Every structure is written in C-alpha cells, then in structure tokens.
Image (tube, rainbow, N blue to C red; front, side, top):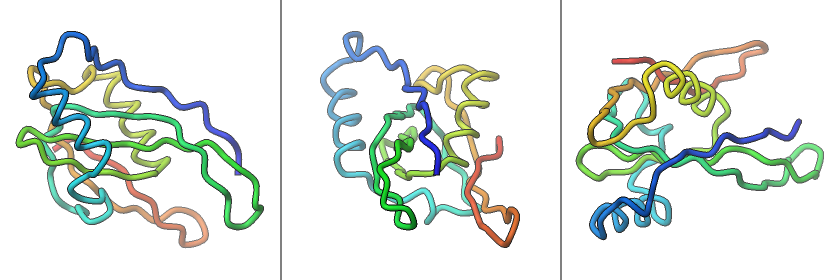
Length: 127
C-alpha cells in the first residue's frame, strides 16, 4: 500500500466562536457515527476535517499514511472514516463547490461501490 499525501482542510479556527470550536473538537475526538453506517443516506455537510494518520498495513506490516475524515452536519452530528474513496470524493467536491461551511452547506449521499476483484469502497454523490 502506498503512502498518501493528505490534503488537510483549511478551517480557520481563529475566526470561530467557542461553541463552533467545541463542536469541531467533539466531532474529531468522539464522532457520532461511522460514515460506513450511513450508506444511501444524505448528510448536509457544514464542516469537514481531514488529517493524515499513520496506520499499520495488515498485509505488509509497514506504516502507511491515510486520510482520517470527519464530516460535521448542520445539526452538529459527526461522521468519521478512514477511506480513500471518501477522501477522493471530498477533494473533488471541495475543488468544485468549495469547502463546506455553515454558509456553504453541501448535501451528499454516501454510496458503496464495487471495484475490481469485488473490492467494495465508499464514495459520495451530490444529493
């Protein structure tokens, strides 16, 4: 498995109030749901946090860098995953629609696709 150069989100924390910071911290530290539990459901993204994490590849034993993504919805609920599919979809969404924010809510549907050799992966569609 190759290392991934992870694009981190650009949330300007210095401009946020204490209530927003509390929501972000709690979402990152203790997310409400797993993204994988939301297949075929819509999430109204108001914030997203992407950060690199190091994990050990179970097949090779080597340490690799993967993206940990936390999506925060308009109600303050959070959805977490370590998924290249979700990461790639979010990169495309951010490039096209801009970064989600309370002023730029982006509704997405979590979908599961099947790739080569019956590998399943998660991605996002615009709802």
